[in-house]
Image (tube, rainbow, N blue to C red; front, side, top):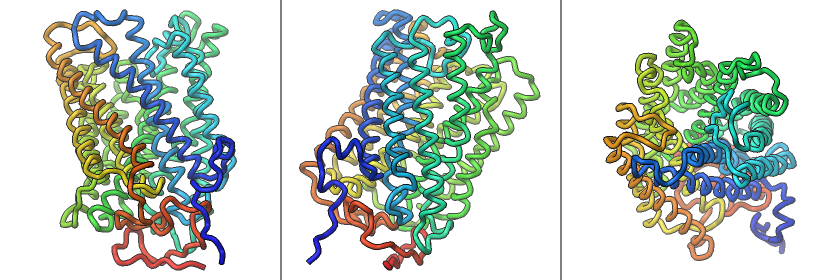
Length: 534
């Protein structure tokens, strides 16, 4: 009698087998460890920033130290958690499973991308340990290229190197989606998670080289005093802003598009309905990817660019909001008259919809020239950004992690505790960042650790919220690893979801499926899925 094929967690457990693995699922778990480490590190710096802002006097850190704290918080969170998080962990694990493939198109390149990501992280860790970086996560010139008295080159090199990880991952995803779909899995039968990652991969491949070259030019000017961005050397600092934001605004969609894909899967499962307007949601992902490259100038309304350019970028920024609104409206329409159940993934998904909507609407305020001039570089911008990135990307990441945790690792987490944690995170987030909208409107600038006394009450509220938010993240970091040892074993489909990933074992076997699946139903079909094997 033939033995049952081992799961990918079975067999070899040695470190060598993991460090040399070509299995996309193991590589996803390696990414999970990496992004979790950098998330915790960035969180530590956020805690220190909020502790400083408890009092208006700036009595905990010196100005230079405070600059390094918020810079390292931004660098680790943006470049080493938010951008790679969902694609590297959930995308790596799920894309082959969702399309019925045995692995990604280029398994060795997939492993290489993880090593490149970790090497980039090590360079940035070195910059932190050697004394830090004080330029802000945007590395604005000529400060970063000439004047900053910190380890800019090491941090820039880390970001430059990690960019190649994004490029390789994007190429791998595009090739996989085009060439390795199971028989019968046409483009309009693909899960929306796959559509979202396809659009994200296009941005990765087209946009990441721009910021990589830009960061490299900063290092060149700093090392060799070539006049690129420093006016004293004949350079143009505004050129850096154009190059940086040409990538960094699309990078917002590298963070948020995969999150939207996660939310589509969770909403469809826990409302027990097919996503309303499936094709509109799918094409809206591509529309976001395209329009995202056209709006970088709204970050530069106060940089001295022409009024006419400002008007154009303002209109385009309003236009890019439309595809995002399509997704929100269609998710709500899917929920309407659905048979909704409120498991932890669904709570995170509902939190995402509310928080991301606030983030998106406040983005329209910042896209309005007159308003942006007033609130530019204030805590209004900080609150908006965090409503999109934390209220959006992090909430979706937690929704996806809870949704696919039983599939990834074969164990169930304590559901009641997970629901309580989701509520704590939601409450803590709002208490942290809603006061910052008011602070920004009243004129408190960001990046300052000394502020007028009248802003203290709102800052105390924000720090109290950060404490609650940190508690929620800490609870998640405890009960998910706990479940690996003490959680109940998961069935192949514990949530009664639809999709090929739920038709294989939990965790999946080494090559995902015993036989090649053949798909003959639409995505999210609520009748019993008709999956045959050949």
